[in-house]
Image (cartoon, rainbow, N blue to C red; front, side, top):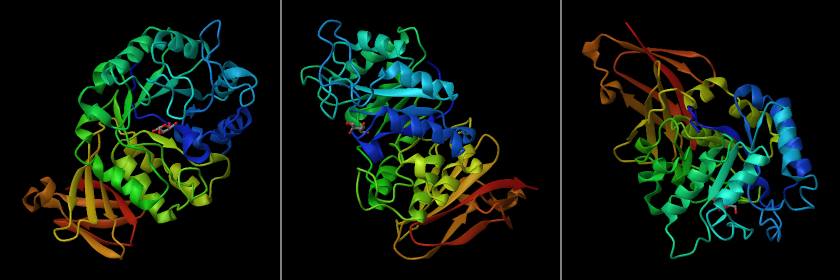
Length: 374
Ligand code: GLA
């Protein structure tokens, strides 16, 4: 399966963990339409771990959907999702058990790929827990890669091994379309900050058809999900979303999309921001940091047309952040000026020759479209 853009969608885990069922997945699929998510480009409705019975079918050996949570089975649910013009995603694991202890796909890869295809699955998140220690993790990911390629249906292969075994160095060869590079995100500032910083030098391994996945977003959870009660402020969620977009990371929402705040909805459907994430060139940003204060950082990204500039204040106090154009090869002698437009306000903030500085509140970000003009 070939994909040219980082996938966008929603996943059940961050807010609900095992508390999932057919009704809430259907309502969330409906919210893709009513909340404008589908129109903004979100496509995948993904059911994460805890969807199955504790054991396989004793006769067919196939995975069985939990009868109470999904009384009509997965095909009926996927039909519903498809009827809304959306795509359906599911979850399994390379191990004998999934990370939450349900049956995994170890040694049943081809059977399970065929089962997922028969249910109309378009996206498989494939986790990395509980594989026999004497087996090789890399080989396990090859197995499902080949199984999906031969199951008769196009299925996005979303690998999730928490970044173990230097996954970025071999994962493209398995047929994966995206790969988790970090351990699980929690709903707080420190967690998304550490994840984003840990991958600063790893985005050279992320490109069309196989994207570095820095986890489902926590934007809009406000501490109400099952992955941490601390929560973030709106400015922190803005910072998180900009980090993901500047990286061309998959945008998988993790909040309860049936009841998003106005700020969350405006942020995750911001077309200019999403265009930066989905930019065809998928180039990694160039990172800079303040000489004495590494909590002040900025990133510059070559888009397929023009550039984007993000000024991040990760520190605990409001600060001014300055970007020197010479750092990215834009010399004064070039005769070029930079015209900056604030992505959030749409306002043109002016034209500048050699540098630009802006006040950025604590735990917030400023983001600009950066065009060079004569
Ligand atoms: C791992 C993954 C999470 C989630 C859980 C499910 O921890 O990283 O995203 O899928 O497993 O058990």
